[in-house]
Amino acid sequence: MSVREINFDGLIGPSHNYAGLSLGNLASARNAGMVARPRAAALQGIEKMRGNIQLGLPQGIFLPQWRPDGAWLASLGTDVAQAEPAIRAAAMSASSMWAANAATISPATDTADGRTHMTVANLVTMPHRSHEWPQTLAQLRVAFSDTRAFAVHAPIPAPFGDEGAANHMRLAETHNAPGIEIFVYGETGGPYPARQHIEASKAVARLHGLDSRRTLFVQQSEAAIAAGAFHNDVVAVANEHVLFTHEQAFADKDGFYAALRAALPNVEIIEVPASAVSLADAISSYLFNAQLVTLPVGGMALVLPTEAQETPTVWHWLEQMIAGNGPIRQLIPVDVRESMANGGGPACLRLRVVADPATIDPRFLLDEARLDAIGRIVTDFWPEEIAPDDLSDTRLIARIEQSWLTLVDHLQLSGDLFP
Ligand code: SUG
Picture 1: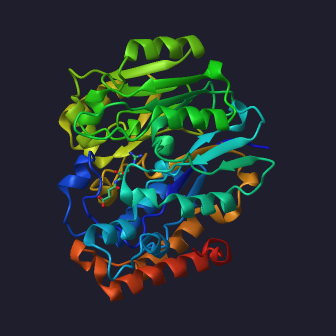
Picture 2 (picture 1 turned 180 degrees about the vertical axis):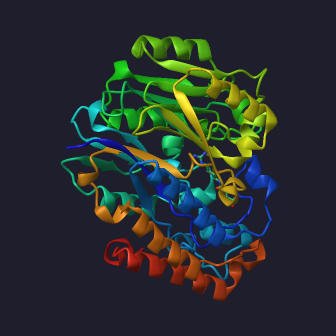
């Protein structure tokens, strides 16, 4: 049995578009109405996955969802031809690419029954994301069907908003040691909604059978949400014993840091002060929406968006950090601009699962050859461009459906996943 941290990336779907659907997500609002490039977007995501495989990290994949979501439209008494534009755009959204919002994961070392628990996120705050969970749940139940190793939970009921791992951090001596699980919730976000509710976080912790002595509930600062950090993973990221965070991420950082140090004495907190990098720069560059990974050769690397390299205050701070003797030894910029333009950086695109890969359905695990084959399908089938006005085009819809069917057939998942 070899337990590893596996990153499951959401493959960017063929309906990727910029409809400006996410209030409080500044990139989504800024790019509303732009022409999206689904093929380039998916290939960017594939190159990010390839880079991580080449670092020696295990890599998994989640498939895009069937779009338009006809079942959801039918439950609203409409269909894609007749729906109002905003409802149609919500039914066409490729937002399941952001796998950090798929579920919250508690590894087996942290849970009462010694299984890895996962709760699919309900994403109820945003209409276009609120209908992701049935197809996400179906996929999790196939990928993690070994009930000796995994327990997959249905979503927390509305109205308690749950956005999954994007508001959850885990710190531990090593990935396969018992961890401290940190649930970050919001109360107020100034003009913007707080998407993660404490009631949902507490319910997930109970359902996963977590030890209350090793579980923290921490409030996200109102300033962070108001500045555009609609998820905590826009202002903080954790890996093993390292917490990398902006100074203004949390409502009561002193109380949080003290509780964390009491629970995990050798925790290293790397705090970026607002005097060096403003919240605005941190959020526009997505400095913290990075994959902080432990390299097989030792040390940690930060896989971060190229936008961080282009933001002088951010890059200057990072270069100074690397020149020091801290645990983060390497910076790896990746181009995920198509996703970034909708507010999704490298960390949003992945869900971390600490588990033995042998217990996971191999159809969801990747090597470079499998990734190459997926890349060929993307190149052959994914639309090159989508403008918001195209979303009702029946030829485009047929092409999106054909793309999905080809991919799912290739991965031999048709029998399991057809919606
Ligand atoms: O929920 N954007 C996503 C971005 C999610 C990023 N995830 C993490 N931080 N983990 C959201 O706001 C934009 C869709 C649009 O406007 O078309 C969108 O849904």
